[in-house]
Length: 427
RNA sequence: GGAGAGGUGGCAGAGUGGUUGAAUGCGGCGGUCUCGAAAGCCGUUUUACGUCUCGUACGUAACGGGGGUUCGAAUCCCUCCCUCUCCGCCA
Image (cartoon, rainbow, N blue to C red; front, side, top):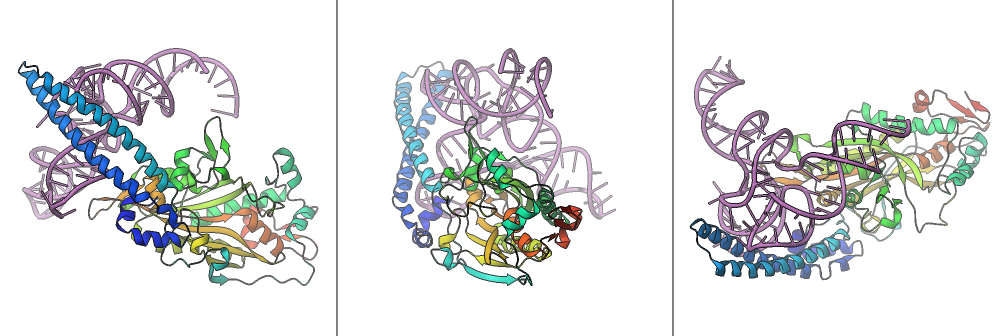
């Protein structure tokens, strides 16, 4: 959520930066509501001041045994006016808040301008693509022949987009999760958390998925709870409504959760295989930091994610999303894309965002500055580190052998306990 | 699911209608004392909104949420939510 005061005092700048996303019209009429709200507060507050004054006079009179019906009459009349004003104010507050909740974050100055993914900027690239002196299989064919996943049975028990991993495939997938978590822990900067996979509305408003994107979420209607689309939601909301101490910052968490996404509106696009799923596993990193450090922390976050890819020797590139492609809550975002050598294209495997104070304001997460003693909103960041399905695609394609077997990447061997998957088993 | 109890400041815990934003204790911060420290002592210690004369200014609001009674509500009434205890069921 943007700060209404900031919008009021920097209207032109806010309009310009929102127009980078093509949504400057969201500001129309907003300041009129704000103006009306402040005028109303001024009026009701002075009425309340008068009522407090009268109450005091009545109390004093009563102590002397005097009755003051004329004071009571005036106070009663004011009370009616206050009730009406408060009711109107509540309506205006709601209207203003609803408006503010649907305005996306302002793109940071370093974000490339542009409207679509074509305008994203590649920041850097790492690694070399594997080459094959044989005819490589695509990942689906390979996975099928190795018998490590079973999409039809996933469809049987739930529907399309719900994968079943089997045998060595299930072990490999679990190995990835443990590998991610262990590396984060061994580097010593993240506290691992295990959090609920189901969250309430407040949590989703805090991180920005609600009220705008309810259609993308699975809802447990009976309890009005949602399956999480990412661990970002429960982990960021760990500190909702808190005032943290400056000494606590930065707070870094990582955690594994499955992620549930309805992917409404994307039917027909990559509905087969691992590329677009309704459920997938992901390890997420979340940071709560002092505002002046958030862009440094953002770079660190990206490095923590790419470190995993380097350990797996996967060719990747870091892409800075342009303003038009930026997620709703993000001020800046790097996507990590990995190269699928058979598919011959880049696959997004991580998204690392700096939300600045946008989520913190929505979720009311503050910290107390030790120098001034004042409270201020923290900056929040998060990034996948990493999501498993698309990484599995690239690993399958990259580490396949000419005899139709699959070599476990060296970094994962201690997690799988075997180093080769063959159609007939593991070795 | 059944029965009961309770939700007050960072924590503990008073407060049943009139300067109670809220006693007291703990914790925190500052000072005093000391070579230094502890103890003791003294002081201090919420947040949000609004206004302007932009100030350690003034006003308003907040004792789980919402509503009601009243001139006036932490205090009375209704309602919702949550927590705890016991029972049942289950992992």
